[in-house]
Length: 373
Ligand SMILES: C=C(O[C@H]1C=CC=C(C(=O)O)[C@@H]1O)C(=O)O
Image (tube, rainbow, N blue to C red; front, side):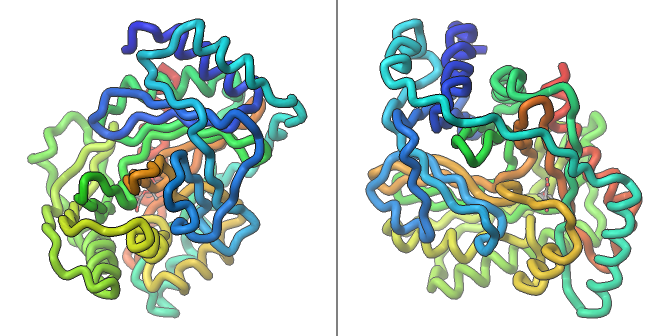
């Protein structure tokens, strides 16, 4: 826990209450929260990540590029590390107070009931068999009543204190939304010429075991292998033939474990090459399915809720070309008096509906155990 936790909490609450576009995040294994604030509300949207070359800030992109939701870029006009925050930082913020014209997002109740989820999964399994799809991700929303905007900062701080190996974030964009989460999945990161991505899939409850004791079933191994082969295929299409593959290994994410293969590409890539790679990787079969376009069609047809930014990607980009992008998973949209928690799981023709429902409950617990503690 940072020594100046109270000042940090006041600073983030001040950003939120005064409708600054801002972001706070803790990169995996960094133990350090970074904060960026845009001092005006003149937000930039983008079509291609390559349009942001040379910029310093944070990107926030939806699951479905063809939906009404845009990809946003928040500038890092004020750049602070959590440990630097004191009363002067709040004064600095005060000098930039934007107009308070933003209304808080209204509460919604899009919760997918057990019955609705079961109807959807049955239809999905039938369609998977009929149209010979390998895998599709079905998601649902769980509404947390009585926990809204007032709890956002505290929830983010608790997640950052509990999850050292996740990408923990709080991002708020006026008229777009406020999201918090602890993602276990890197989409693409590039620093000092080393480019990394992961293939993540398969879920089990940790249940007090050490990761080495965990045995994976054929269905889970297959599900994860699909994500790996998709990534390797994207590499091939980009003529990226030299990379180091590690895994699959069991990787812990709170109370659950996944199978994870890590890919390291050591040849330096320019920003536009990285951007093209992101464009092709997203959405991976960890959040969409295979074949990608058919899976996307099925998701649009079967899910009744709007995923918005869940299963999209987000993270910081720097003017020197470094990027750290993560999949927006294990995350919640913060509303006035509610939080909408999004969870999903990979469905194959062999899926057992009740087990899949339980898996989404386990994933939800990753966040609930911490924010309700
Ligand atoms: C879609 C989610 O998780 C993905 C990432 C890891 C394992 C997954 C699975 O086992 O289905 C999912 O593909 C989610 O947490 O909402």
